[in-house]
Amino acid sequence: MKQQITDLLCAGLARLTADGDWGLDELPVPAVERTKDQTHGDFATNLALVLAKPARTRPRDLAQRLVDVLPDSSLIERVEIAGPGFINFFLAADAYRALIPAILTAGHHYGRSQLGAGRRVQVEFVSANPTGPLHVGHGRGAAYGAAVADLLAAVGYEVHREYYVNDAGRQMDILATSVWLRYLELCGEAINFPSNGYKGDYVWDIAATLHREHADAYRVAAAQVFAGVPPDELPGLDGGDKEDHIDALIAAAKHLLGDNRYRYCFELGLNTILDDIRADLAEFGVEYQEWYSERSLAERGAVNRAIERLRESGHVYEQGGALWFRSTAFGDEKDRVVVRENGQGTYFASDIAYHMDKLERGFERVIDIWGADHHGYIPRVKAALTALGDDASRLDVLLVQFAILYRGGERAQMSTRSGEFVTLRELRKEVGRDAARFFYVMRRCEQHMDFDLDLAKSQSADNPVYYVQYAHARVCSVLRQAADKGIVIDPTPGITNLELLTQDHEQALLRTLARYPEVIELAAIGHEPHLLTTYLRELANDLHTYYNAHQFLVPDANLRDARIKLILAVRQVVRNGLALVGVSAPEAM
Image (cartoon, rainbow, N blue to C red):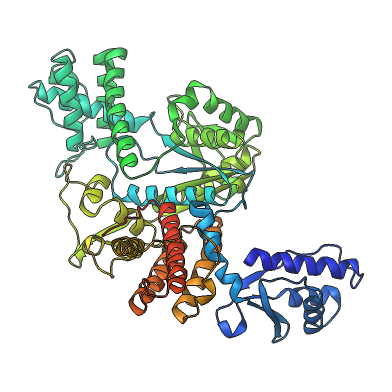
């Protein structure tokens, strides 16, 4: 409807231009907004106020000239000029009623558009280091990223969903060494486990696999492992350094195991956890087109190529044996190391190469979804892209705040195998996938989120996801009741009998249904899936109110047919909206 009114205004502007009423070289796209007060109509535009000055005329006079040349349309009942020159559009009743067959005919396509047709966008999200299970913070990023990607696809963008696998670097070496040390303990060696190692029970599980499959083939005496290793940083003891300690243990592991056996420990840890992450996200309803390996950047020479491009443009310099990127020249608080003194590239160097590669793959826009703690990382990545000569404005970084779990009004301490964090899997098992996906996207991503576990599990109107799903199930229950009574439902989406939908509750439902395509576009372009969950709650409320106030299976066959078609349209829109946030639409509850 909004687009149709926009088209009418554009046609009116074209007529004025053709008649030579003004000398404007370029005509704007009219801004059409849904009114907040129905006494002002259904839609309004300030187009006359915007064009009055360049057209050298009074806004109200221009508004009248526009109204006079608007093409006839069955969509519009009347047009009024209000205030200093606003144009208010009152839609005809038939325009709203025509929504019902349109929705039923379009089915799951209803609300989708071609707004972004022909434009490629990449959405990279979660991308957690494969050093442990996904936790509830990753869960919010997963739910949000998947919803953003699906909304963009719904409005026509070609969306590429990607997970960046950090399968190189020091953290992976710490994981591999942690697995090996736990393995040595299973072999009977007495190990003082490093304070900076990975301590979760999942590390024991991987070590147990290594021991089960290879017995003592990887065993080395503890004395050899710790020979010459500097002391750890421990409570109450001075002189230790946990970073030097773990780095020395990594070096010892590589030396004592040799390339092949160390690589096996490395790959076993990586692949076990990565497989677990893949399975976890699939169970959460999140799928990717690509799992992009960080190691592949170095193997293909992308990291070296990025550094050379920075060197050629004069944006790197050597100091203290390391190579530095001059990020302060682009507003960063300090310069950043890209190659360490030992010749190894930093994580930042890989990230520069990765984003360079993203833009080289031809994506018009690149969207990164990061945890809020990475806020300071944004300017340096954008600085690097600018230094490479790329357009940094093609990169959007969206920050997701952590989720805090509450049970019984108090911060929850859920039991976990690691004893360190709450896993996404545990949350999913406790509240279910639907509740988790819906709750995660009910707030703006940058807002802190309090996740009420009791509310998420409750079967009441206070539970927003239950309330929305119940609207869908209620419509299905009406259809079952009709079948039980032998009432035949006409499946054709015609407009017959819809003029009987005159009740206020019916008009409210029609107006809410009409907003759905607009909500989808706003949620997609603004990366705000919470707009959709808010809308679904409003639509569900309208349906429940209607359900409680009126009978659907009335004796009058024509009225019954009209009301059934209306609630079938509601069911379709609820189903479509829930699908875009990864939530099911049950037929019975």
